[in-house]
Image 1: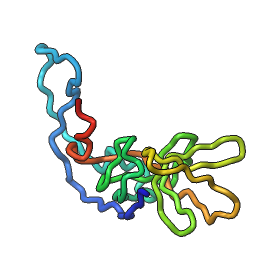
Image 2: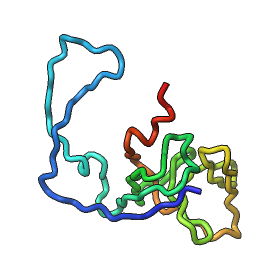
Image 3: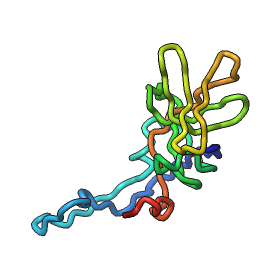
Image 4: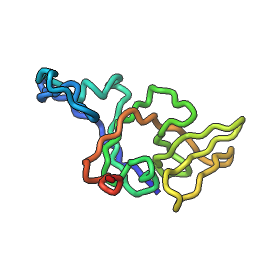
Length: 148
């Protein structure tokens, strides 16, 4: 099960880092000039500071979506999720990370690991969508199993 450790973001003015725009993941062009800008990572990923939290993933139920143990999530409580969104929710007292699946009048929480079963959300569940995952950050080594 992928559980979440919730963290409130710390906003520190002046946290700007060198930023390379347009890094090619295909064929590089030797004619492209080297450009260096600055990036405030918090400003880039946090659009609604009063409703945004960070979360640390615990567990492996989302590994098929390349969301691994220790990954940091940027969760926005003000964004209404749509079908297929990754959400952090509370169901029967546990915080979980799953994909939201809406079928007719039924809701499902879908893992991204075949070792885990989907969870059907019923009226009997104590259920609340806590926030929509907007960004996922992880160490590149967390997903090395996906290298070719």
